[in-house]
Length: 259
Image (tube, rainbow, N blue to C red; front, top):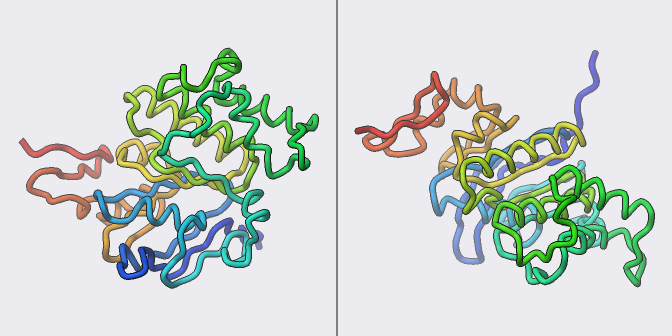
């Protein structure tokens, strides 16, 4: 018998929102190391709220979140910094740093109290620069970068943090199609080669279907999750948008506008 793979994250019957307002409930899914997962859904359905809840940036309303078999609440801030890294849509306050300096900030959970980088820290920074095609830009100030370049730097910083779980909030916002594909393929490569679990929110459903191992659809009802092919087979994408304007083509795995 093959050994069962251990879930890197498992979510059971989760409700999310704010003190007096439930944004979404009935959310259950699990992921294993080496998987790239997109959270998709219409605007306002709770994608970013879910991501922030998974990262302990805001409290859950009810349900369970387990990371590596341990409930999120039992992780100290120090443990969490070595367990998960977060890439938010907000621009970093430290854009006056060079690319290399900003990526090196990802090593803070491991450095000593004066922040001295060890040989291992420097190796992680170099690997992140290389993996995200940033070596030629290492000495550029972050405020000099294009949106696509800065997004690569922020993800490289998360890679340098070397956590098993990486959460990203809409990493392809404001990018053209080429750079959207570039970012998502780099994330796919990072998940598969480094055995990271990577979860990101996105509006790029067509790209997610092509590149992700799993997708979670927040639909405000059953919130199904599974492989893209499973979700296509179960016709979940066809119910995502009003059919009079947009229809899902199961053969091509893409949405088409009704003319």
